[in-house]
Each structure stands twice: as structure tokens, then as C-alpha cells.
Image (cartoon, rainbow, N blue to C red):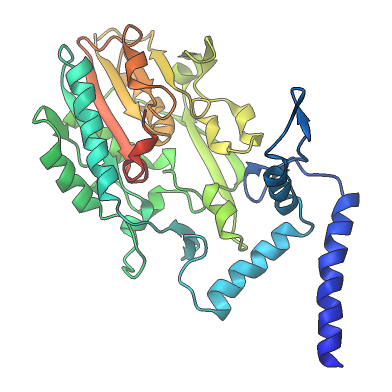
Length: 360
């Protein structure tokens, strides 16, 4: 009888939840997962049969399943509390912070070095100094070594051996700690980067212009790791620093062919709230500083970490150009970016270095 009840109950759940899902409105965005959800696919697209319909329908059913967040939390809780796993979907919580585990991809590391050397050969003959820096994952600062992580020291050592001797390494790891990063996100907190800014400018022989800021804060920030952990974790504040200079400067976005502000508050309500900084991921940005004429130009090959760092460097340069090779091919830079008489900084997180095939 007991087995019968369990079987009937299980079948009822399998039938009941899809039926309930039919009557519930579809959700376009998952706030907890910080991503757009799959919508019901079209059988016919552009007058032709959609042969991907069943794959798209399966994705739709999974994304729109009633109680999805609840079942994600049940799974995560079981992984940690019942089965004793150290991580769930590559993330774990310790001391109120969410960390992401990883393993070093040495082929990707080699590919990254080759990519930088090719850029130097193609574009940087007439540039000034060439620098590079590696941003550690915050798990680098976690003393508990039972969790797998990319070995920062091995990454740095390998790059020193593989890159041309013209590349000068700037070690910023000692200017950071785990509190320099968001608890719920992979990125660093802008308000903690004074030491990084000082280290970069000093190493690149740039005079630091005395600058004061006022801080603007958004509450209830939930980053990319918050969406992955599926456990109750406190949200936090996202803070950006501004002043009269940053409020007045406009950034030229090549992809959108328009001028934009340094900070864009409206992006806080988007799926990725970190896009408040420089409007988020985009191929090419140019920032002119109208209050300074020191002839100093900086070109940063970057990932998303530079979005929050760059505003703190603007006061020391005439012009800063940001190049994101995840969204623009190296060959397309010719005739668009003027590398002559510019300092070059390759600033990448170890996560991107570990997945360097993203770079075009």
C-alpha cells in the first residue's frame, strides 16, 4: 500500500506540475538566475519549418517549470547537506561569500600568450610601453586549499616565459584581498581599488592626479554567483565612485555610434546590474578627458573587470581606449585604433585567460 501511494504521488506530481505550468504566465526573466528565460518557440520561422523546435521546446519547459527556484534550492541543499559535496555547479559558500572553483587550462594559457604576441607583432611597433596584469579570482585569497582553483603563480610564471621581452608585468595581487570582491559576484568592488590604481599608475610611470570621489550606492545587488548557488545568501550594495569630471565626461561607444555617460544607472534594473559601469560589455570604447593635456594615451585590452577600474584612471590620461576582443576581432582594429605613442595595458582576469578561445 505504501509503495502504491508513493507511485501514485510521484505520477501526480509529474502530471500536476506541467498542467499548472500551462495556466501560469511565462516569465521572461529569472531574477534569481539573472538571465532571460526561454519562451515558447515558433513552429514556423520566416516561412520555414523550425527544425530546432523540439530542442527549444525542451529548454522552454525546463525554464518555465513551476517552482523552478524552489527545486533549485532543494537540489543545492541536498548536494551540500545530504551528500556532503564541496560544491554545487562549481560554486560554494564560505564565510558569507560565494566562490567559484576552476582548473587551469594550460592550452588556453598558451593560446592567450600567443594571442598577445601576435597583437604586438601586428600593431604595437610604434606604441610606447607594453604592460600586462592578471586579475586573480577571489578564491585565490581563500586560505582553505581543498577547493580547486587556477594557480595564479603558475599563470604569471608561464606568461613571463611565453610573452615577448617587451611585455612588462605589473603584479596587482598584493593590492587585493577577498574583501575586494563582491560576495555574490566574480567582479571586484570599485570602492576597494585605490591600491590597484596606485600600483598600475606607478608601474606605468604616470603621475597620479589627486582625486576625490563621492559614492553612489544601489542596494540588493545579486551578482552572477548568486544566481548559480541557489541558496539563501544575503544580497549586497553595489557602489560606484564619481565626481564632477566623471559626471561631465562622455564615452564614445563604437558599436552604438553614440556618446554615453561613464555610469548608466538605468542598467541596474537589467539582468546584469554590473553594466552600470561603462554600459557593460561592448567591443570598443574611447574616453577623452577634457580637463587634462599631458599627452598620455592608454589602450586597455580588457574584460569586464576594467569597466569598474577605468573610471578611476581617467583623471590621469588624456585619452583611454578600451578594446574587448571577446566582441571584436583583432583584424578589425586596423585603421580604427591608433596605437602610435600609446601605452598598452593587457588587463585580464585569470578566468578569461583560462578561457582564452573567447578572444577573437
